[in-house]
Each structure stands twice: as C-alpha cells, then as structure tokens.
Amino acid sequence: MIRVKSGGSYVTIEDFSDLEARPRFIGKIDPKDKDLEDVIGYYILPNDIQCGLTSCRTKHKKGYVAVTKDGIETNIGHKCGKKHFGLDFDTKQRAMRAAVTKQIRQETVLEFQFSSHDMQEEVYTLLNRPLGAKLIHKLNSEIIMRSRGWPEYLSSEVSKMVRNRDGRITEYKLATERDQDLLIASGVKEENAKLVRNELGELASIEALFPENNLKELLISGLAVRLAELDNIEVLALDGIELKKWYDWCNDAPRLLERAITALNLGLIFHSPENLALLKLLPAKSIDKKQLSTKLAAHEKYWNKLATK
Image 1 (cartoon, rainbow, N blue to C red):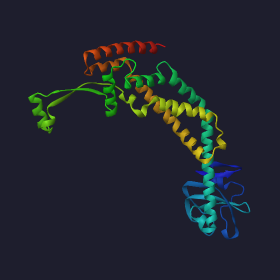
Image 2 (cartoon, helix red, strand yellow; image 1 turned 90 degrees about the horizontal axis):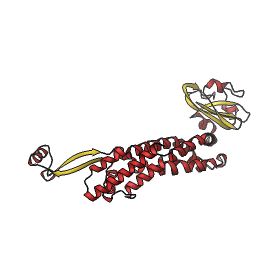
Image 3 (tube, one colour; image 1 turned 180 degrees about the horizontal axis):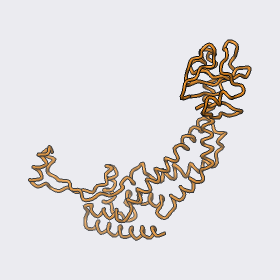
Image 4 (tube, rainbow, N blue to C red; image 1 turned 90 degrees about the vertical axis):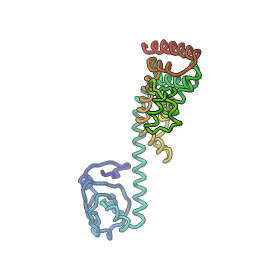
C-alpha cells in the first residue's frame, strides 16, 4: 500500500511501479547533491525494494517518498531518512502522516454523512413500528419499575434475575433425608444440604433487560441524535479532536445499529405473551397471582393487536 501526495491531497496506489512512473520520480539519487524539500508519502510493500539513496541502497519493505528542493522524487527506507537528512526529515514525515490521517478521517466522515439518510430511516423505523424499540423500551421500564399493573413482588424477582444475569425460575424446598444424603455424598456441606433447588422454567431473552441493551441509549442517544447532528456539521472545518470523535463514531455506528437490532429482537422474544406466561411459575400470594393473571391477559390482548398492524 502506497500513499503519496498528488496535487493538494493524498492518493492511494497499489503497485510500486505506479510510483516509479511518476514524471519526477528517480529511483537513485546522491544525497550529497540534493537537499530535502518535503516528505510527500509513505509505503508498506509485500516485497523488498532498494532505498533510492546511492549511499544506502538497503532493501526494505517500509519507507517514505521524499521530494528534493529541485523537485525530484525518490523513495527512502524508513531508517535512512533521518540518518541522511537529520531531524528535519523526522519532522516532515510526522507532518505528512498527520496530514494523511486527517484526510482519511475527513473522507470517512464525509462519506458516512453523504449516505447517512439510509441509516436514519432504518433507525426511525426500528423506533416507531408497532412492535418497535420505543414500545419495547417502555415495556422493559414498566416491568422493572413495577408500573402499569405489574405486581411489586414480580418486579423484584425480575430485577433479581437481571442482576444475576439468569432467567431461570426456581424454588427451594426442604430436602428429604435421602436428598440430604445424596447432596452430602456429592461434596455439599451438611449445613447447605437442607434445601433442594428445583428449576421450574426459564424466561427466554432476559438479556433484553440488561443495561447494555438499553434501547433508548442505543437507538436514540447513540444513533438518532448523533445522525441528526451529523447532518449539520461542516466536516472540513472540524478541529483535530472533534474530527477524531466523529471518525470513531462513524466507524462504530454500524456495530451500534447491529447491537440495537439484537436488543430489539431480544425484547420481542422476552415480551411475547407465551414467554411472560412463565412468570406465573414464580411463588406468590393468591392476591398477587390474581393481579398477575389480569396483567398478563391485558398484555396479551395489547400485544396481539399491535402484531396485526
């Protein structure tokens, strides 16, 4: 890979022969007869080439493209430049690399800005469709915050599952003597062998409620707001710090969208009526079970209505 200045910007060329074909390029110069003007590119090659300085000619794969004060271009191995041209070479190659980095970042952000409307439309659809992210985020909040008819005991149990990152529904019963003997024989301490844990079922996609799958943060704060901001920025006017922030975000945005889609799909599974019906397996008082049955029936009716839209 070769990046070299052409006009006012840096271009990428794949083959060293294309560099040699440049009209001012000479593959062998005497550094005693030439003064360095600037460093205008760099290369990382699969095969060795010789340094363009007659006093060196060392074979290498990494190096720089330099131009002398009389306009001659040549290639210099990455260790040779500073040795033959002093600290000035080091300063100029750093400036060149910074300019290339800035151009790459600007091009990335500009390209993303140009095509961002497709992502904006996808984010809007994910948020606002009948069984979309806004609804799922609302349902997630309700079941955790015990609002909209969810019994208090149930929200506490679901919050515990989230903290433990485990959707299994279990109950503990007093162990029979035989159970205790078997547990002790398997290595369980006697004081821990008095209760037996029975697994009653498992809520699918409890991950939908995990903090990292917060749909508001992923789709609204993480994408919708930033996409709207991106529409209005002047990319070429950004300073180095802001440009890097936007460059990093543009590279991260597709992955963020994938995470949001995954989180939404988890939420659709978790809040499906057949999955939430498993909540009836949680131990509860009769009055709480009645409240839960009423809530689940209302949820199923609401869910099925939205699913037909």
